[in-house]
Length: 181
Image (cartoon, rainbow, N blue to C red; front, side, top):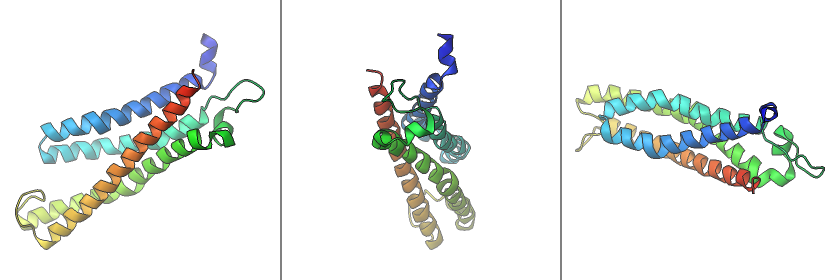
């Protein structure tokens, strides 16, 4: 049993479990409950603190999964590691899902998160000018209306990218589980 620790398999399974568990917990439990129980400013502070780590995991895990991809030991088998990930038989079940997770995680981490944070900062400045919170009912200033629209667009794209990431992670997990049966 100790010899298995010298193979990529346990690190692969643990990395996959961490990725999927993090995604499911954050997307379907943590974010929803936090939004329900925290005041909007506290919720925003929490999300700003959590998102870099969350998107970082989504960006790093597929690389670790690719590096530890466990191949087959028989003569006709798929090799381990990156060579196995790029093997033609793994295009749709391994390469595409892991590539999707990597790209969507990176897009969220390096573009959408910083852009959303910029718009959020501008909304806070505009709230001071307007004397009204960005989420308050009623007529908003033109500037706040434009900022709210931009925030909504960025948030929507980020949420869609996150959902695509979760789906791609599940697709990869199904492919991985097919190797167990």
